[in-house]
Image (tube, rainbow, N blue to C red; front, side):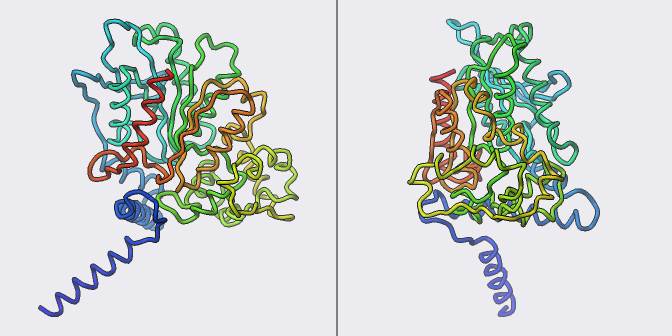
Length: 408
């Protein structure tokens, strides 16, 4: 009996040691966040073991775990009709809210899910529930795009997928089929999906052949640059769940099919040191000492080395491509973008990407709403139902949908 108690005590202590991580005092629902982070870390470690055993790529294994535990089949209710189809060969899940008698034409949002360009799906419960809520509360048509993922495809194929699906949907006959007002279509996405939405917005703003333009873009804690992994938010939140800096840099390397040996050098900005001439002209476009307010920069110092590893950019030139890093786009591109909403979270390595993009857009004359949440963490908006029901998830989702309702 005594040995059983000792064993149970030891297991509980080990579990507590694994789950507990120090968190800022002001972060919302800290114990829930610790449990969520521990679950995700556990899934990552299992997938890494599968990779080491040669059974599958670690991202395929991790995505299998994620999708298996949360996949939902297409369904319909009295208020929202859900169907799976494809737009020009790209799979999509379409959520159709009930039209109002006084408004026969509905508004619409093209939504792009997050997941480091490698994980998740419109068919998992988190995104299914988000898009259902959007369709219901906005009486809108929400098109959630199932773009292809790493490691099956790499940059820029994900962008090609969302562009194909969006162009197909914006055809007059397709908009008519779904009873969508051509003048009330927006693009949105979270995290890596926010990155793809921003890239899509920039490409469409320059495409003279498009008859129907996007009315707005809404970017949720978007990934927007890969040149500086030492912005104040990257320094402050280097080890904050659920997206530590090391994990984000690995997602970038995976997206470009790069070499993991470069990760540590990139974390300290050796890929954009002063002797890397290819990056010299772009560094000024994300000079956070001028783009961020003093309340954000605080006492943080830029990390800029005189000499670094020029081979990284030579082997991964995609790092300096504005399609992958929309924050470094030319000012002439930014000034043609539509009204923009950007949601950022205090405890997120990507916080400053969003704030800097908002500032660059404002400087270009674009109308921008920056919606910053002081107690939130990366990914929080999709966590709104049990057992991952976070109060900040509900607050951010409500704020996001309210802005869409007022502006779309």
